[in-house]
Length: 393
Length: 201
Image 1 (cartoon, each protein chain N blue to C red):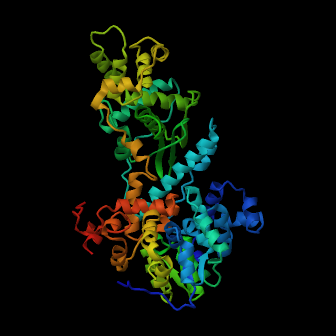
Image 2 (image 1 turned 180 degrees about the vertical axis):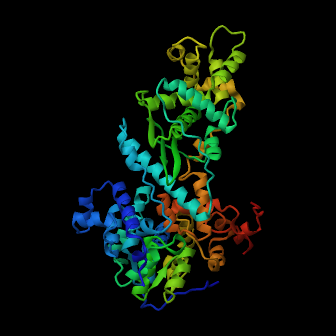
Image 3 (image 1 turned 45 degrees about the vertical axis):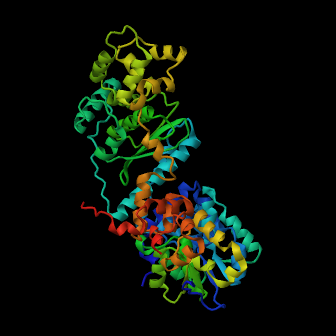
């Protein structure tokens, strides 16, 4: 009878080992040397032409900083998103590398947990719209309005764009703390679908625009993208995505109508106007003013005027909005070691004995005690859980 | 009240999973407890590796383990003849496998005719299925032994409380009553790793 290792397809084993090696940033020669085999042997193992022996597998796992089980348990997902980010010309390679690894890990964990628990994500991606010749801004405006119609949103302001992307399109959206220079990452992969990582440290309005920006990349089916502080509009793809996010979050007709209503009786754009409109459209104050400039509702340079004349402050925003200023749930969720949904999935998998404490700690890349906090705090019903109301669907 | 105990003969080596090591470290009295028990305690190499990888999340359990190696209270050993069992326990469907440290604990106990200290219910179930001859202990049994009570004296309750609070030690239902008697209900209710049902004990 074959051993568990012999029962696995050697090509599948080799592919998993290749991905783990690349994540560990090791060259084939380095990995081969570390386990005392020739480079050609390692290549043969990765290509599935030679079966890896158990002792070699354990050595490789140690060199790659992984467990054998994380590499070869059948349901483990081996998302391979990192290389596509490394190919991008990046202003902040180290920060992007870490963020891309985080997106890879979160996606991998969520997909494996959903698969184990039998959860089928409803995928409903919009029709693909390749970028065509001509003015990309015009196309972006049309595509953004088309997506709004497709989603049944009409022209109304969007309060919670992230939930729409998650629930109506089926995108995986993670909001975690990232370095300030990174707004978001997007990847589209056949195996895991469309996923994005947004910066929890950024304010909600800016984060919403980043989410809409990445949705623009889904519309054009771009394989990967990093939105960072210095991401100027140097490529047609980026010009498209920036214009898409502005049009999606602030449709011209609705913004013009709201602007007319809010500014009625005024001759000048006031801080109060900006704060109220930015709140209505759930975008940053700067993006709002720049969109007003773009739509020729105010003169160019309006934002710069505010910037050089005392700015628009958070205190002023609190004063104007008062109780309308709701808490930022996504930022609050990002304060946890893992997000609330991933924590619930992990707890369910643990309770059903699908994954052990050790497997979950490795999958979520957290310590055992942190994991115990999550599992025990998620299980608020304790031993009374058996009497809790039953779910009917 | 004396809780049930499954301690094997004194000659049987005791293999510690990462969970047990973390609980002992959390108690703040690992050295005193293990010295009092005076058994041949072994940590599998895979458990040590896991704790070292976990150091990135800020915990330094492997350093505390290094100290215990230095004091010759615990020794480290890699699996040898237990390789086949380790392979069976790590490669396969998720529901039928364990992470390397948990698997190595069972495989090494099997290889050395030792007992495995495992708290994880999935790990205990798979050990019973695939290595039925291996006696199983839980972390809490390292604490509730008469020689440990003698060694710790009046500090016993604080040490167990630390393990529950700092390491969130899991406790088998068979030992809940012992814990509540030791800590008192008020303190026991502060420990999130204990179920709310302890109120009724």
